[in-house]
Image (tube, protein in one colour):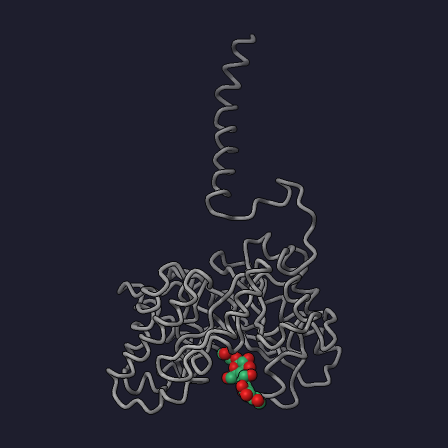
Length: 359
Ligand code: G3I
């Protein structure tokens, strides 16, 4: 009897034990958070902690001039687990004169992030906007290609190991899916994008390399063009690892196929990220718009959670007092999760509840 029980345990128990050991090993090797129930972790109370339970980073863009604002830096470091420099890693700041680099403002952000255990998305190496003035005096493709590669080597080399990802190329497409006539496109041609990814990979082989753009969150002519480029890059060994969907939305006007679109990109074998999320509305904000904004934010977060390869959601700023919207869209604002007084908005609660799995 004892013998047969032991044998039974051996046959039933051994696979069970193996399963337990293997699943523990799986979590260890993947670096994934173990389920909360496994170690009785306290319930999350912040966006970052809630997102971590789902294996995601929840970030916010920041600028170096707010580091002295203690209320701002407290909310940022408490609620968010990632950050993106809003302007400090752009070409006009980092290489204002050819081959003379200035990383001080971005270094301040990286060091703030490191001291608060936050990851950093590098933004951005090649973009037609906030480009140093000297670049426009270049007249040949070969010279511009050389300048671009030197810029990437200098900047991505400086931040090697300190950023988890790079927006290597930003906003290279028009709404109809044609290429934007940036200086890079005009002098070097379509190939500048692949060249930029290759150069970044050489400078920082472990960083996740992203193409980042706006109005590509739903399925449309622009996202189709980006999709075709990513597919082509994957087929030809160009080291693209990710697509960033900026997600600058207007309240009540989000595409309904965000999840399907993220999924089709993920199926190409790239990570997908929500990189600059904000949802603007006419100000002063009405309570109906604030409720609709909560629904809209919830839908974006739910779309990301539904796609396994969507691992980062970043809002473009921390609070409504620190947003690009009022300057660029007069009459609009209130686009973020915290209001002008750092109070949590309905959208904050909707995002939090969605992250922890409640409606
Ligand atoms: O640096 C000057 C300063 O010297 C001057 O006193 C001040 C006066 O307005 O302007 C400062 O420059 C501003 C710059 O941000 C740095 O603060 C510009 O006016 C302002 O237009 C610029 O705006 C940035 C914008 O990109 C430019 O395109 C926003 O802060 C930044 O949030 C925004 O971010 C972009 C992403 O990089 C890409 N996707 C879209 C997103 C929103 O536009």
